[in-house]
Amino acid sequence: MAIHRLIKFVDERLLNQPGRRLRFGQRLTPGLIRRLQRQGMNRTVRYAAKHSRFYQRKFKEFGIDPRKVYSHADLGNFFTTAADLRNNPVEDFLCAPPEFGFETTGTSMGVNKRVYFSYAEMQHYGRDSAAGLYNLGVRREDVVADGFDYSFWNAPFTAYYALIPLRCLHVIGAFVEPKEFYERVKVYRPTVIMGVPTHIVRVTEVAEKEGIWPVKLLLLGGENLSERTRRYIESVWKGARVVLSYGQTEAFGANGIECPEKHGYHLDDLNLVNEIADPDEDGYGELTYTTLNRQVMPLIRYRSADVTRWAQDGQCQCGLQLMPRVARIAGRSDELINCSMGNISPYWFEEILRDIHDVTDDWQVIVRRGDRDDRIEFHLELRPEAGADEVREHIFRNIEERFPDCWRYYQKRFFEFDFHYHAPRTLSTGRKLRRLIDARRDAWEQ
Image (cartoon, rainbow, N blue to C red; front, side, top):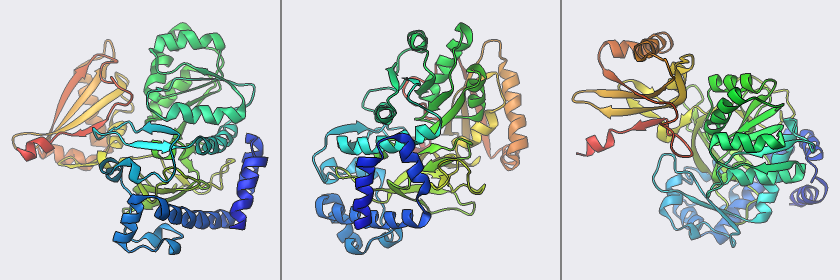
């Protein structure tokens, strides 16, 4: 425990400057990080067992002795799930009085989860996030404009607390109409722009017509981003880098940050204990984590529903190389659909559509049940002057080349395709566009 107290003292008193914090993190050894994680895991489990009614019940049900838990392996088959957060009173998870509350965006379910924090916890996350931004080149003299939606969501406050230690000028543009956002923030000439990819693409379309100013970084989060979209944004904001953050509301949106070399996400090993649960033969499984350094609502072995694997391309050489990396998120476990087309995920359709420039980056695929087989229903936004027949043929060529097994199934009429075309900017009406939907459940239940 002496090491934990020393680290806490250093964290709060000596490492408030992002550059100094980053350099300190770079000097930690893997062995020391593992030791801190084991101590933090044991401390968190014992704390939750004492204060959380939910974990008291679950530990008793699974026969878990909190005093003996130092790793996820010590928890056996126990996990905390999103369903647990939805189906139990949130008070059963609280271990201390909450001071700030957020809701998840409910991408795949109709019921949002509530997650609570203290101001001290958000400040702690902010100091580590500031070090991550410093690693990306953000400095005191930068001007940062954020376009996040402030309604119930953690993302803007994750940015806010990360920028406090950097002492940047922070311009809150929020989730306003893209042209208004562009016109109002350009007065400040921000060098860093933050926001959700879908929104920032729209802002970029305005900038492409109206003109740009020097921007060095666009930090995007809240949803995935295709490489085609990244290249488009970088081509407009000439000289800028587009980097993705990775986070969930349950971890204050601060699970990790994309490597500057764009080789996956570095995870925060000092605030989370991470694992890949139930990996398949290729190493892909569900990212699962335990939150450390949390007093209000700690989560133990929480199943994120995000499917990924540990990075396969060796050790990164960036400033966060000691922090483990996962590959890009392949999809969500609740968006992986088994159907006649195969075990499909949003990744499949990103690959199918990535070089088809006649459709926008907003698309949706719905799997429906036909009279005798599955029907894969494409909903695509066509750009002006685009031809629906040409788009359809391009999609077929890409499937044949990139997913040959799927193409053989199609030729054998194991499933059918349907195509529905929409005007630009009509598919996405909320904060996030759900990419892949299984609509067969109602048919099965009839």
